[in-house]
Image 1 (cartoon, one colour):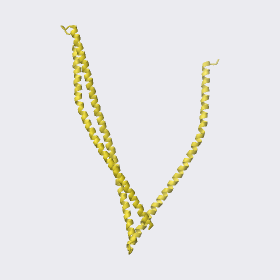
Image 2 (cartoon, helix red, strand yellow):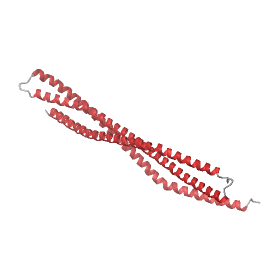
Image 3 (tube, rainbow, N blue to C red):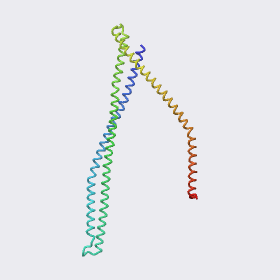
Image 4 (cartoon, rainbow, N blue to C red):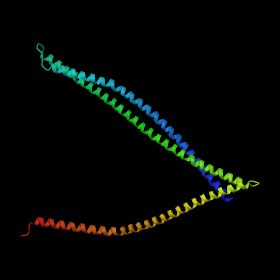
Length: 271
């Protein structure tokens, strides 16, 4: 029967398309899962970088504190030597002051370098933490993609089962019809099932036809509206030069009026 053959071919085509779609989604899922694993590995590496960077900060901070202490000591020594003690020649005192100032300068330079290293180490911690946060975002995005693909695959299974059941029913109906000798009771049951399936297909076809009619009506309305808008735009296009000319004339009139007012102001009040 043509109907059975057409329905069988339709269901088989739908099953093949569904299988191809599922295969593509499965391949996509594998790629997405690999992306999750890669992002997790990257996060572990970034977290290790954070730990290492944080480990560097403490000794560098201690060194900076020690350098600050040396600066404070040098400042205090210089302050204590600001007045020459008795019994020391002026030249010796000035030489000592110069040595203390040099020591203070060197201590300040060392302290600045130590603090720069602390700042650099803290920036390294911040950069490593930013890498961890970026890896977290990648993990979240990749995980969401995996879940979406898994959900898409899950939605295919009921449809696939439905198509397979329909194909099995059609094969059974065709088997009963072609059975020799015929089983009248089984054939009557098959006829009822076939009639129900035909009614379902006809109803689906009718709904599709109505949807097509609605779509065609909407398309025709859209085309009409588009034509109206095109006409309106064309009219506006013809009015624009005239409006521009009027605007230019108004601008000229305004310029002339301003010139006249300026002249009157320059001439002063009329007697």
